[in-house]
Amino acid sequence: MTSLWEPFSKNEFRQAINKCNNSSAPRLNKLMWYHLKTILKQDVCLTNIINITDTCINLRHWPNYFKCSSIVVIPKPNKLTYDQPKSFCPIVLLNTLGKLIEKIIAERLQFLIVKNDFIHPSQLGSLKFKSTTNADVALTHIVQSGWVKNKTTSILVFDIM
Image 1: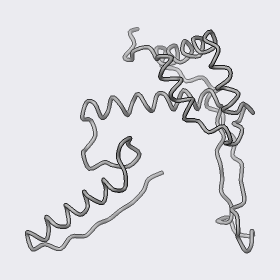
Image 2: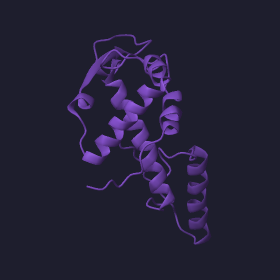
Image 3: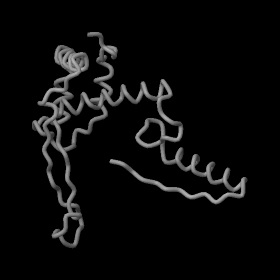
């Protein structure tokens, strides 16, 4: 079985782990990002984790260990009452290593999608180097193009999470 992916690099892992916030909540396995950052400073540990990641991709298998999650419900601050569900925020905690690997795969997928023009130019959400300013410019262009043609422009916006 041949792999569709190039093997992951140490640099990909280092860049991804450096973006992780040390003060975020401990993950499902109680391993915090700063613990994993310390572990990955050891070259042999980083190499082993990269091998695990490459093997998961090559076997097309995501271990159950990485699929486990736990939901923690946290009260939102400054609510007058906490007798309504909307007064709370559920947080899903995943396995720390699995979450890191998911981040790296997502980075790689986004790079490949953008590089190969697999995404429509008007797609702006959740893409690197795109911002609300890009969306504002695109929307302004659409509205003004409609005005030139003496058209009325409407917009329907939704967010899928």
